[in-house]
Image (cartoon, one colour):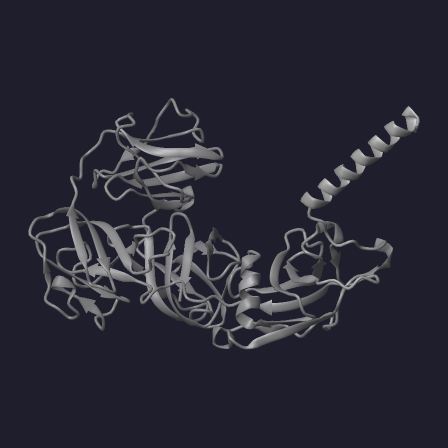
Length: 453
C-alpha cells in the first residue's frame, strides 16, 4: 500500500495538470519569440533626403515615392509582420500618423496620399514643410514586439483642393436688396462644417421690389423665379427682415419673414466676462440701426453668449470665434482672453470680436503687393452692403507677397504668415500668396481672411 504522503502528492500533481490543460484551452497563445537581443530592426532603404518637391493638384494621382525596406528579423522564427510607414513634423515622432501600411517590403505612395498626410499633421495648404518618416514593425500588433527603422526626411510644398462646391460665392442682388442691382450681398454656406457646399443663406432686410440670385458676382450664372436659370426677377411682396435660403444645384429657395423684434438692451454674459454668468455687460445700440449692438469688452479665456433684456428667454450662441453667426439657444462662444470691440446683429445673429484699433467702418479695403499687383497699386475689394466689416472680391493672384490694407492707407493694414486663410494681424507679416483665381474675403474687424479657390 502506498503511503499517505505519496497519495497526497499525486493528487496535487493531477490538479496542476488539469489546471494547465484548462488554461491552454481558453487562453489565446501568441507567437513564441526568442531573445529580443536576436531581433534585427527593419531598415528603410530609400535615400535619407530628397530634393524638395512642390505638389500640385494636377499631379495628385502620380506616384510620389515607393518606400522600400529590409524586413524585420525575429531571430530563427519566421513570422508574418505588419509594417506601418509613419510620418511626423518632429524627429521624435511624438505625434506620428500612419502614411500607409503593408505586410510586404514596400509601399507605393501617391502625391495625393502624401499631401493629405502632411495636411493632416496641421501643415496648411501651399506651405513648404519638412517631415520625418520611419517604419514601425509589429507581429500581430503586439506592442512588446514593436521595432522601428531608421528615419528619413522629405521636404514638400503642399497644395489645397478647392474648399468651394460648384461656386465659391453666391449672392442675392436686386432693387429689393441693400446693394441694389449694382452690388451683391454675399450669402454664406448654411452648413458651418461645409459638408453641404450648395445651400446658401443670409438674413437680410428686403424692400418691396425685386431680387435674383447669382454666382461669382457675375450675370453669367443667375437664377430667377422658381430657380430658373436666367429666369424672371423674384418679386418681394412686403418689406421686412427675411432669412433667405438658396440651393445652387436645385434652384430651390425660401424667403422666411422674421419678426425683427427690437430689444432693450442686448448684453454679453459668461465666465469670460468680469460679471461671470450672473451679471450682464450691456452693449450700446447703434443710432441708425436698432438691431446693431457694439461695445468694448475685456475678456478672459472662457465662454460667453449674447442675450436680450437680461433674460435667458432670448439668447444667442455658437462655437465659432472670433466671428460667426449665433443661433437661438446655441452653444457657448469660446472666447480668448483680450480686450475686444464687439459687434452683434440681433436679427441675423452675426457677431465679431475684433481689435479696438480696427473698429472703424472703412469706405474701402484692398489687396496690395506683387501677389495681387505691386506695392503701389491697390486691388479694391467690395464692401458687403449687409455687414460693413466684410469685404470680398474675385481676384486673380500671382505667386508673391500680399497684404490687406485700408485702401490707400498703410496706417491700417493686416498681414499673416498663412495662406490661404488665417487671422491677419495689424502690421503683420506679408501673406505668401499663390497664383490662381480666388474668392478673397476679409473681416476688417477681426482680421480673418480667406482665399477660396
